[in-house]
Amino acid sequence: MPTIFSKIIAGQIPCYKVAENATCFAFLDINPLMEGHTLVIPKKEVDELFEMDDETYQQLMQFAKQVAKAIKHAIVCKRITSLVLGFEVPHAHVHLIPAHHEREINFANPKKHFSKEEFEATAKKIAQSFDTLFKASS
Image (cartoon, rainbow, N blue to C red; front, side, top):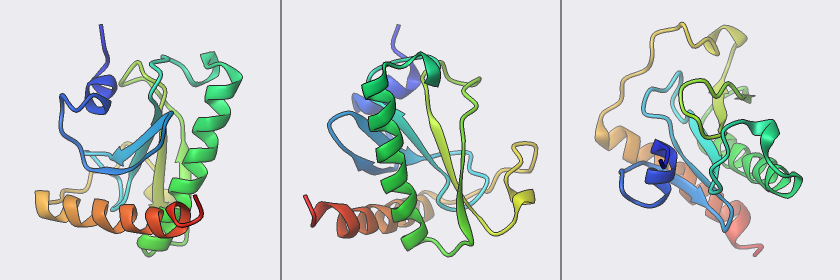
């Protein structure tokens, strides 16, 4: 049975997409810790990060690095943090979270609430940053 992330990739469930390539997909987390909190996933459905074949793992990490650079270019923050938890959805994913302080990266913290228009604006900023940084060099 396809995961919710596979359904997002297939366009069956809407999302705020920020970037995509042949093997990976990135979109805003709808329950973000911070503005720009993005999930990066492989298109291949694999439950745990370390169950992935080496090629998919390397492609995911390279793509996550590019998305992180695009987020940092688009969102004011001290750094982009990355976390792999994977308990809530059985599809490997990397959380990229802009932050100013370590205490902001705690999933027990209240989630931020943004309107549809705010999510769309943030996704657009990151997508444009990604295109500027990486599409021009393709």
